[in-house]
Length: 538
Image 1 (cartoon, rainbow, N blue to C red):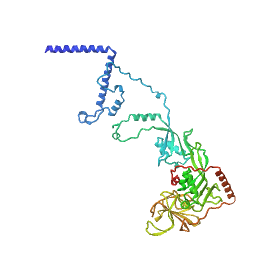
Image 2: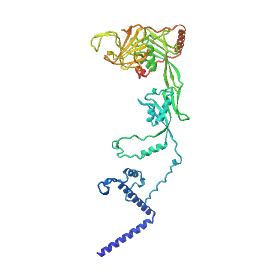
Image 3: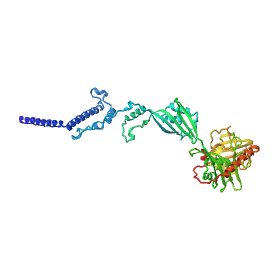
Image 4: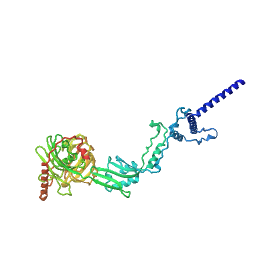
């Protein structure tokens, strides 16, 4: 027993001597000393993290002094932040240090942040904001991060040069603003230290979605937009810091064009195929509507010609249509030629034939464009009532929503629902004449009993209301309160120029004829992508 103990002690002593010699040999070399330091640091870091981990454990309730459940341990969130932000070189807490032949890299030298010595200046940025349906300019600016005070002040400056109520959905604005570096830094820090308890690649596991961190806007500099192709508006700060709006109108170049074509289906389609802008085609139809019944007069093979103006911006972009100066249409055995003339600058221009007689009669022949008569005036079998009775007007087959024009100038007598007529409109004209419009889908804005309307004004839209079997417009002409056949009624014709007024017109007519003679007639084909109702809606 004694020999065994003595042998154990001698063996331990020998092992200790070998370890000491090995340690002394290791400490004698540079790699050995680095290994010892690295192992010590690893042990210290492992011990610290273990202490932090123990500190994050929930308290043991119901045991001893801690039965109350209160804890002073380190919060788990802070532990996560500290472990995530630790340097990668010390992230491993493996029990072994680096290999004896490797040397740890020295930590990088700290970079001095010179922002403390030199404060950053605000950055200037520009972005585009587009109005959505129902938006206001002030609301759109605030949604973009502009302060309520700046947004209100900018809109107040705008109304001095432009009515903000005329802004429409789709209008875009370029806003220039400055950002506060301090606020941006604070927002970035807030975003960096935000925590989540769910999986990063599982949206459902991360709880409710929160608004993303946005760049704070500290100062609105300017707003610019173009309400039309020929108009630019800028809202900017003056020397005192107050907002001031400036409006710039581009100098447009006027051009003339002579075009024509042959009708094979409708005047509108033939004119569009000839490359005539939709707005000019609408003017043509309106001018011809006093002299031409588009339902009964037009035939395939009829020809037309128009001389009109249009305007471009300095960079060649089309700005808007001008006026129709001359139109002519060959209806087989009859030719209708009209010239634009404006005797009184304070009154709208009128169209006259070659003899100086106005084309404008008291009532237009057709209150809708491109309409087909589906039912005439007289006795007929009523499709809803099931028996024959008098049809006291004519029906035009047109889709719901087709614009309905006032056949003549006058005062609205009735505007509302009226039995089998559905939505109904009646207009009183001069000399005992009146017109009525039934089965309307709706009235135009501002139309009510007592409204004054002018000839050709859009007063309603066709529909299918009341006792109706399909979309159409029911149209009546009344003489002394009694319905008469609109296709046979005789109405007063336009006035005939005389004296000096007629001489001025003849001079204008000769000038237009000279321009036509010097200009080539174009008949190019173009794609037709819109119809007349869409053009009128614009």
